[in-house]
Image 1 (cartoon, rainbow, N blue to C red):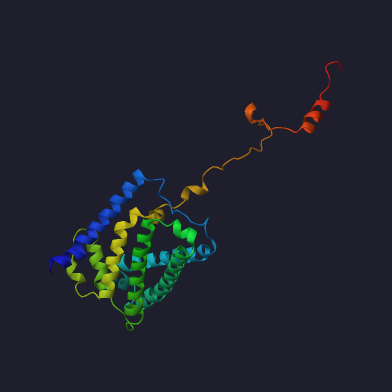
Image 2: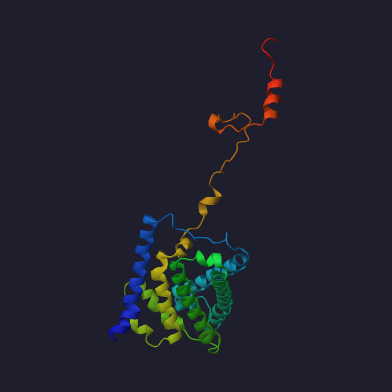
Length: 261
């Protein structure tokens, strides 16, 4: 195998993973205030309420499908009695539905960014790069699924015999780039787009994916005003005493008992 292919299927994925791990640690240690979605809901919420759940639920099931297809060896599913035909149907059709949801949601989010001027002005350069790379990874994966798995015959392309073992060997530092030699170009483009997205992940708003608000349900209430009758009024500085009208001052003077009474 030539050096270019070794770089593509060994060096580049390792560099992307290293950039991801180091970038996440660096971002957490130096920019926790920037560890956020940079929500633009204040500018527009109608399209966001539709597109955001559609994209996030779709991408969640896409991710689950990737984990199942890439991490679980083919021999394991065969050992429990799941044939290749059944696996293909279970993986392809729900995966296509999830892909459609994710693609439509992302299109809605990008359309919202472009059309709404306030949202567009609040879009940073890193957001624009993120949307391009995210769109490329999602579009290439959806195209590969539809062209090779959904329309590529009753069995589709058996990526569990090539891409899956290649990726698992990559993670245990026993790279086998030769497994990617005969992989269709559609999947090759998707793999490269995916690792490119992984490399820039820590430097974009995508870091919010690792910030599940688990502590929100157990945090104490924020007390704005106490309902405890035993709590006395807070002494205010005289400089902040409100200016009363002349009528209020006369009423207060009339209600005050005289000293001679």
